[in-house]
Image (cartoon, rainbow, N blue to C red; front, side, top):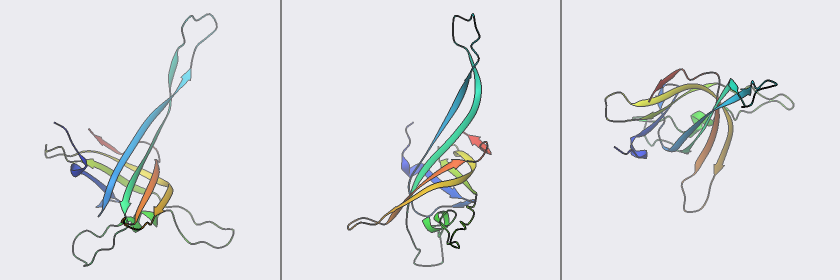
Amino acid sequence: MYYSGTQGELFIDGVKAAKVRNWSFSSSLNLLDTTALGDTDATSTPGIRTNTGSCQLYYYAPTTTVGENNSASVLINKLLKAGTEGIAPEAEQVVLKLSLNNGSGVPSHITCPAYLTSVSMTCSVGEVLSADVAFQVNGAFSEVVL
């Protein structure tokens, strides 16, 4: 069975994000060289794993208080904060859950503590205001169901 974005969801601190265009993540493992003098083939051992990702959210404000209201601003405010000159405010860690409803009753998903590493917003004529958000996982995934 094939899946599309209609089965995808993003949760921010346990609450479903309102208007998500897409999400992605990438995991990589650095290998440490263990090749010794006299070896004829290279050998290695696992090193540090790095997990990063991104998502694009529409900058959305609900027209009523009923329903989804976890908009892009909720996530963006974890990184973009006013500060005092010369003193940057601390970024907040967020828990992200990237989910895919696979029809089994238990959606495929990963859950991770993360820090936002960049936010880029685009406002253009003829398009909905959106925010591109990049993140880096802080530590290991807290849950993986694939």
